[in-house]
Length: 196
Image (cartoon, rainbow, N blue to C red; front, side, top):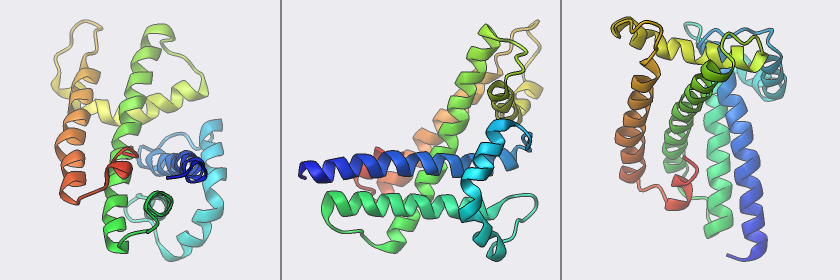
């Protein structure tokens, strides 16, 4: 691979992954019923609205799930993977296989968003408990639905919340046992596995 292809690969991976993150955050924010008026939520809505508007005419929401943003995330992931394969190997590969890899990639990113939101939430609980910063509130709104089931089954330890530990374990096990095994079973190239 020459230097120009390497530079193109870096640009495609960086910008594509950033936009994919924003689109998937839009899905997650609606999934967890986050505050729509939060400035960060407004940024995500504005950044995704131009591509979601035409999709919403075709793909309706089902049971409160914004399927159009999920479809857009899969399409963006497919395009990023196709461009990475084209720049690295000179071919885009089989579209059906790309679709399967894109679904695996979006699912992996979905888990990573919750994983890193948990890390941020734990750090904020130490350094800025009860913060009213828009970012801190959004992180709390994302992590609360994930932590609630663990908090119900965990005993009260007098103000010490160990539910994030079990949430971390659950997310890591799903990533390790499901996502990584699916990537291997579908023969995803190593270059694309690094995107997970």
